[in-house]
Length: 123
Image (cartoon, rainbow, N blue to C red; front, side):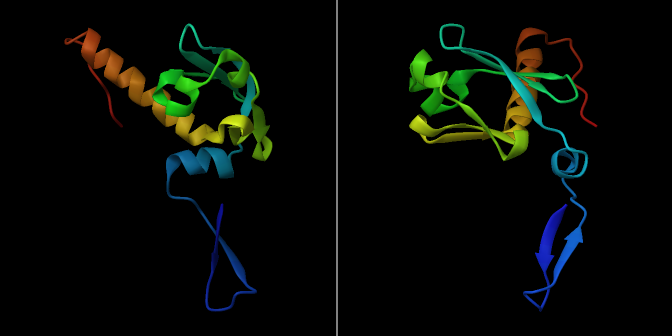
C-alpha cells in the first residue's frame, strides 16, 4: 500500500495501489528470493521470486551492467527485503518491478520477431 498525506502532515492514510505490479509487490509481498545466475558472457541475469517464478533479463539491457566485469557483477546485494538488487560499485539498482517488466517486454518482442503467426495476448 502506498501512503498519502492529506492536509495534516501527521496523518498518513493507506490507499490501495492501482498498478497491478505494485499490488503484487506491496500488497501481496512478491519479492526476489535469490539470484540464480549472473553471466556476462551469456548476457543474462536470472532471479527467482518468492513464488518460485524465474525472471530472466539480458544484462545488456542496462548500460552499467553491460559495461561491468563479471567480478563487478558478482558484487550485488539484495535491498529492501527483496524488492530490488543493488550494485554499489556500479551505482546501479534494479527493482523487482523493473525486472518483471523488462522480462515481459523482451519475451513479447521475441515472440513477435520469431513467429509472425503467434498470437500475443494482452489482458
